[in-house]
Structure formats: structure tokens, C-alpha cells
Amino acid sequence: MLIRRFFENPAAYRNPFAELDRMRKEMDFLNSSLFNTDPRHAFSAGVFPAVNLTEDKDNFYIRAELPGVKADELDIQTTGKSITISGERKISDEDANARYHRREREAGRFSRILELPGDINTDKVEAGLADGILTITVAKAEVAKPRQITIK
Image (cartoon, rainbow, N blue to C red; front, side):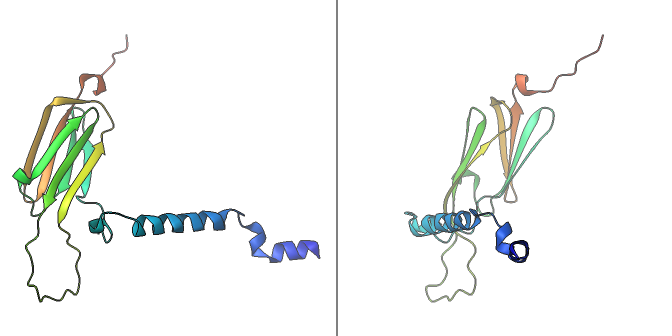
């Protein structure tokens, strides 16, 4: 009878701390949404701007989607192994009587810090903005570049 009760009860297999872990995650989400001091982030649509980071033998390439942002509204800084992209996205005001059916485009200041996977040469960083895509080319430091070793 004891064996039958053990195998028929699916709760016997559950992690005893699973429910506590679920409650902790829900409390973290509740705290982050309720006690956020900046009201602009209360209904945030996500991380802005969306970024791709790729590399080849000599460079890292960062491509960020920044539709409607002008080059003079951006600030790009490098420190150590990271790059910071900051700026402000402005959206023209709608009619005061406009009734929204969907509002996903947000305006305001943004800042993204990207930690690069290797050392960089901060003197050789180039950036360009075309068609709403920011492209940053970052040269790798000589110590970070792969080196071909010949076998003797």
C-alpha cells in the first residue's frame, strides 16, 4: 500500500523547493514592476536598441537598429573591453485627441553597454549610420588576434 501511494502521487517526485523558486521569481517580477522609480520603464517594450555583435580575425562588428535617430543624437564611448551606445529617440507627438489601438514605439533616452569578448584597440573604432542601422567597427588589440603557429 505504501508503494502504491508513493507511485500514484505525482507530487512525490517534485522538487520540494520548486514552489518556493516559482514564488521567488514572481516576487522579483512584482518588485521590479511596482517599485521602479522611472515611470518610462514601467511599460517598456524591451531592450532598445536591438544589437548584433559579430567578429572576424581582425575586428568586432556591432550593428544596432536605430530607426529615426540622427547621428548627432548618439554618443559612443569605449572603455576597456566595452562599448557604450547612448542617445535619445524622439517620436513626433500625435494629435491630443488620438486614441491608440496599439502603442509599441517608445521615445526617450537609452543606453546599452556591450561587453566585448576580447581586448580592443580603442584608437581604431569607426562608426557609421545608414538607413537606421548603426555600424561600429572595433579593431581587436594585437594580443587578442589569433596567431598562426608553424610546426617545425
